[in-house]
Image (cartoon, rainbow over the protein chains, first blue to last red):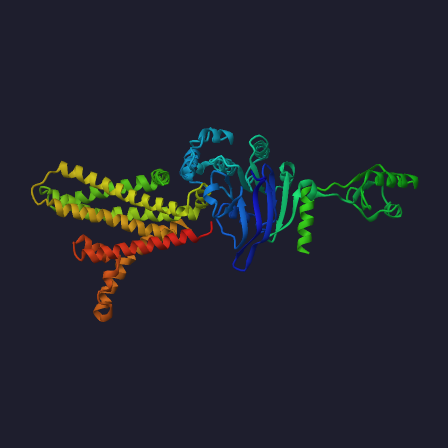
Amino acid sequence: MSDTAIEFSGVSKHFGSNVALDAVDLVVPRGSIFGFIGPNGAGKTTAIRLLFGLLKADQGLVSVLGNQLPAGLPKVAGTQIGGIIEEPQFYPFLSGRQNLKAFAAGISTRPDYDGLLARVGLTEAADRKVKGYSLGMRQRLGIARALLGDPQILILDEPTNGLDPEGIISFREMIEHMTQHEGRTVFVSSHLLAELEQVCTQVAIVNHGKVLASGTVAELIGTTSQVVVHAGIGQAVALENAGARQVKQQADGSYLISLDDTSEQTLINFNKHLIHNGIPVSQLHVNTRNLEESFLQIIAGSES
Amino acid sequence: MMRLLASDLQKIRRRRGLFWGSGIVCTLTALVGLAIRLLEHNNAPWSVHNVWGFFSNMSLVVLICTVIAGSILGSWDQARGTQRYLLMGGATRSKLLVAHALAVIVYSLLLSLWVLFILGIIAISFPGSGGFEVSDSLRGISISIISSGVFGLLAFSIGTFFAEVGIAVAASIVMIFAAGLIQALLVFLSTQLSWLKGAEHGMITDAMDNLQRNARTTSSAVVVVVWLVVCLGLAWLRVSRRDY
């Protein structure tokens, strides 16, 4: 069995003169939680629509569990791959349970509707009409719909839209459970980068239809040469004399500096040097970046 | 396919306005129409033939309800974004289209049968004498039912081209009635322009009228089939090529 759940190979898609995807190469390992991030209009939803055969690629190959799309779509749609794309849409005049039955009409298996509704916390609202559901409830019903065919791959486009903080936490726990205990692969696109950073094993950053970077979250955040020094006021020149570059004073009075590297030994030596020269250091630590900062830096780099 | 059809029928049944609304409208129209006839005929004894004949008049109401249902079924999933989730669930575009079209036919048939049932009860309640020609009545009823189904399917095809359900319903009703106006215009123009002579026979409204009157049956049936094939073919092209 292949270790690859999803593969894009040189995939391009144009809408008129607008390039939505430009020779995209992407490999999503089986069993991973793969974050797909990018600004609005970056091409995320286009890539996801290709995975469901809702669009046809102009060039390149898209495959799901080794089945090339769209030819292999009948083998995977519903039973191997399920998901949410943009806002979850339902029949407002049907109840939550009736909606699940309506969308399961094309699936060969008979889903456990009660089990799915219980899983997303909608048991009590199961027989209420969806037109009375909040956005958060519809998102949860959307996840239940995505699981109708018990798919191995779950594609979630902005799944936390409309969820309250408690809902976001339970959503995070749910997708972690799906990958760790059920062996599913989750491909998730979201603007909540802090959430993705906590939950994703791999991430790809996309902009203007191109994949700018991909890898583990740690790889994307990468190492930084920036160090934060708390050393009192008016020490910029002294820090430069100690070998610091690009010295900037921050709003809290600390200094953000660059060193040649941020290894433990370099920091010890630098600290010794400052103390030896009478600079009162109260704190000195590597300026750790988060996914959001890395994302903004990569996007800014692609725009310049 | 059967599950998709059952699901579509369930969606029609759960739309209260459409399901109960059309049933109530048809029932009330039948009762009011027959009451007016009763008054017009000065309480004369009913003829069964009159009651069944009244179904032809009633069929316009059934036809309008079917046109509304057809255009809703044709446009809803595309306009409201549910089509992509049906496709993501494993249903193919052609199966969805066929299931929707069959649902329109079943709805039209059930509504016609309901009206016949109401009229049947009235006929039994007011037994008349003579004048009932089974073959003529059955033919008229059959053509009325087929007419509703045909126009429902045309409205369904029209509906697939609209991204807004309300506009699809309005456009379907307008286009179905516009067909009658175009037919009248063609008849008028053919008196002025000889090369237009007989052009009105190509209109589906004229073909259905002819079938109702048992005239030009073969050519009229061909015209109806051609209209259906072209319109459903265009709907299939629209649905199969559209991005969701």
